[in-house]
Length: 208
Figure (spheres, rainbow, N blue to C red):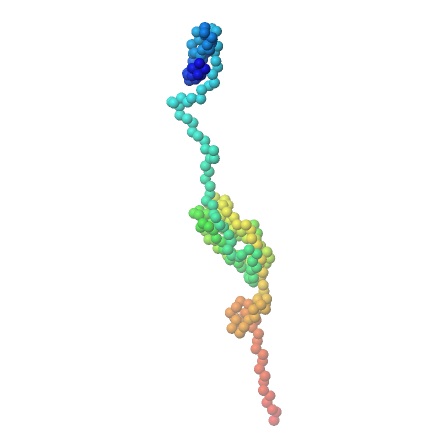
């Protein structure tokens, strides 16, 4: 009996939303569920709204949990090859050539830029080689950036120090003395500084 009532109730739940569901006790003492109450004594049952979808309706598009965004291509490696970190550069004119490398190679539209002591010292370009001249003696910081077409920084190396020691020509000669063949050849061995040979002894002519 209970199973029949449950089956009847389930069938009534599937009725359209416009039809009401009523229940009452019949003459035999049984509870009856119907969509057409036989008398005013029937009690209306409030049903929960149906979640069934109208087949004529198009479901709204699903919003992805993580919206897709275009990410700039990344570089696995960007580092300075020359000079090595904490290197000491000895050059009387304060000149230095800095070189860098990236993996993968530079993407189309990207460019390298060199910074020294936090300030750009080169224009953005495709070459990873940067010649520097007349660097003040002392400790300096180098870093290399990769820029995109809009000048935004895509990658940057950590700052690494180097030490510029602008030794004099006299110090270079002292460290590596000039030999006979070096005069006029090595910058620290100019001809004007070449020692003059000692004067030869003049033989004495006896006075007669």
